[in-house]
Amino acid sequence: MNKVYNTQNDIASEIKDFLLKSNPNIRKTQLKIIPFISLGMILSQSSVASSIASFLKDDFSLVQHDSVTRRIKRLFKNKLFDPYSFYDSIIRYIISNYKPKHEDKRVHITFDHMFSHDNYTVFMITMRLGKQGIPLWFRCFNDNPSAFDESLLKEGISYVSSLFDSSFNLIFLADRWFNSISLLQHIDSLGHTFCIRLKKNIKVFVYDKKEGHSVWKFLSDLTPYKYHSISFHDIFLTDSSFKTNIVISKSVDVSEPWIIVTNGSTSRAIKDYGYRFGSIESVFKNQKSNGFYIESTVNASLDYFSSMYSLVCFSTLFLTILGADYSKNSKCYKSIKLTTHKYFLENGTRVRKRVMSLFHAGLTLFLLAFNSSKYIRLPFSFTLYDI
Image 1: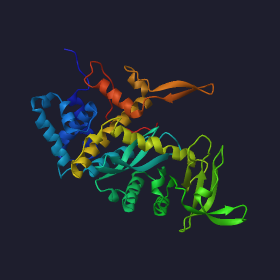
Image 2: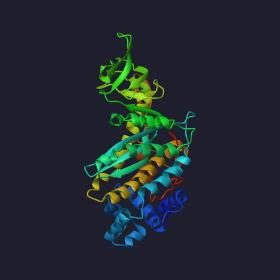
Image 3: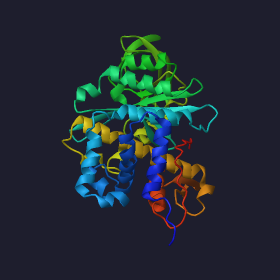
Image 4: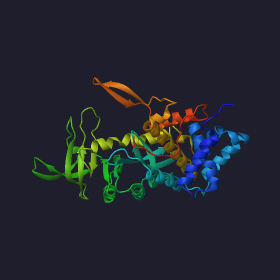
């Protein structure tokens, strides 16, 4: 009989070992089912309990499908399962062993909200990994005003700050819905950089050449340059007179120039802010239409959704780390070849571009390795490499 590699029990056992390593106090009842739920999510590419159950085999095949589904739902409804503590232990362990690539140790952190129909709102903070991101911290709500409470946003920012030691240079990125002086001051007080897009209706105290002195103007009154960005240093933002820098991107070939406020380098602000899109939008996409279809869960309790979502984040994290490992340690995957990059001609120059995301590289690799008759490396150390 031919040997089969990376079986259901093999993978569940590896995940179990990691969960115990990252959280030695995890409950035994949770430890028995969580690895299988995560495995079922990946195989089914779904967050729906019945779909997850249908992909679980071995001992689960001896149990009625409805019974397996109910067991999964019990975990999601279990008051003793704290989804935020569960994910906290995992991400703290992973970040403590993070392998940065660049000497300046720049880490781009993005925060934003995600909506699942009209049922749930998630406030998420992610870390950029290549052109994608991984979830660092999240909170789920079915009451939208609570999801936008400024104390919550500061709590998440402070939490992420605590994950990294002082040798890292954290750069916080956010869209124009987060135009709060209090948030900027909070990030600055923690010793980190912010690059946040501003709305045009904000007033700034800026030098006017015609007047020969500084005057109050709306950002909409500042004229962008056509072919390059323009910077304003040490200006005062709003009536609170918060002293900071502003950069306006070039206006050519864009529908609307970016107006970025930053306490960091104005020469890097536009480039830094550009990382926001991939670092968080990719996570939301992977959890929705491009991965686990969390929007299939409707009318469940908030506790149910939060628990389910924590395992979606865990599975998203694992597959993205797996994709990064494939990129970093390609020589270890001689038995398999994934086309993750292709070459394109741009202005006569041959340019190499990624065509398969880290998440989908990890997913493809996992599906090929599962129950394979040939050995395909599947690392479960959860070592996070900078890409």
